[in-house]
Image 1 (cartoon, rainbow, N blue to C red):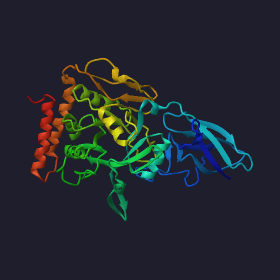
Image 2: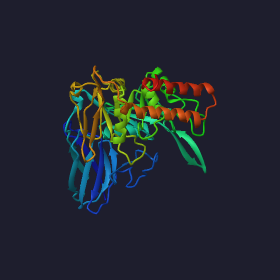
Image 3: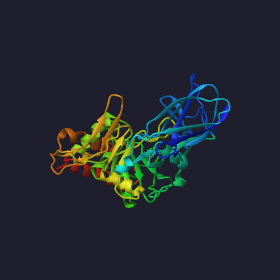
Image 4: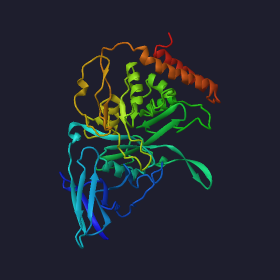
Amino acid sequence: MLIVHLRINDASMGKPTPVRLRISDGAGRVYPPLGRFARFPTGIGEAVGSGTLVDGEAWWPIDGSCEIPLPAGVPLRVRATKGLEFTPLDETVTLGPGQMALRFAIQRLIDLHGQGWRSGDSRCHFLSPHDALLEAAVEDLDVVNLLIAEQQVAGGGKPYRVAANIAAFSGQAPALEAHGRSVAVNTLNAHPTLGKLGLLYSHRPVYPLTFGGDEPDDWSLCDWCDQCHRKGGLTVWVDAFRNAEFHGEAIVAAVLGKIDAIEITEHSPEQLEGIFRLWNAGFPIPLIGGSGKASNATVLGAMRTYARVAEEPYTYKAWIEAVRSGRAFVTNGPLVPGEWERIAGNGWSAARFIDAKGAFAHASPVVREEKSPPSPEDTAPLVRAVQATLNWIETAGRFEQARRKQALLDRCREALVRLGAVP
């Protein structure tokens, strides 16, 4: 084996650029860079950032160069990728005796920065901020939202609750940034039945991170939203409409105007049907895209958000406000920037791209002045979901404070009024 210095340049800049790398031979053997390993865990929360499994293949992040043990005289397939705006590199080389260096270049296909678009991942977990920053550069993301989430781990034969990265919370400022990329550390707040929220750009953490389960239900998602808004943050509904029968209090918060964006992590017809019904009912909440990465089996930015930012210099706040205002689209590959804000029609309009191979992109809705009243077909499923929440509160919720239970009941009834279910 030769210890080879490998470098991959941005072809337009002539300088090393971070990429996701894989080198293999004809026998299927892979060659990881020094400090990385051919096998790495892919379970939730297990050494996240040590590599990425893509379609069953191991890939490794590098910062543009690395030292890597490679055999001489053997054809080697060198592949590298860098997000959505670069043409993937795929070349075959054979090292000569004593060859100690390899040089490649990766070519940018399109540059959306010049049109005012900045890309971001709305949610990932368990990466260190440094790993998240490297992967942001590797996947050509301007911002990564690394969300603190409570997790149960086993130690000494006992389960423990931990909140990874709690000391790295950064709120409205990046925890780390370099070369135009940034990592912001905020929180994922979750109830096992009522729903999940990503709370971004909050200047302080919003506690508790969880409630319910083995603890009383004396809190609410609406409380989380109100606290986040008081702290200047953006509230994101995570896992929206992932259950066809019951969506919990998150839908109440959406109807009451407390949800700023709905997260898309994959193309799900079931989820889109629920979102469209919410939009048709008069609640055109913007979209935000994220990978939800919590293991090495998911690519950071697999689903991402492109937000149109007019302000220069670019800031994390400007990206957040562009998402909040709906100047954004989500995508797992197709790039659909343009003047779709001018789409004609009544009610709401939104550009969308879907193909049979799984490519997907969807813009936030553009709202028109003229709109028709919502139909019972759209509002009825929302009403049922709120009524199911009321039933859960009365029959299954465990409240130690009567006033907290009453406050949650009142919010559900207010949502029913706004949906036209109560005169």
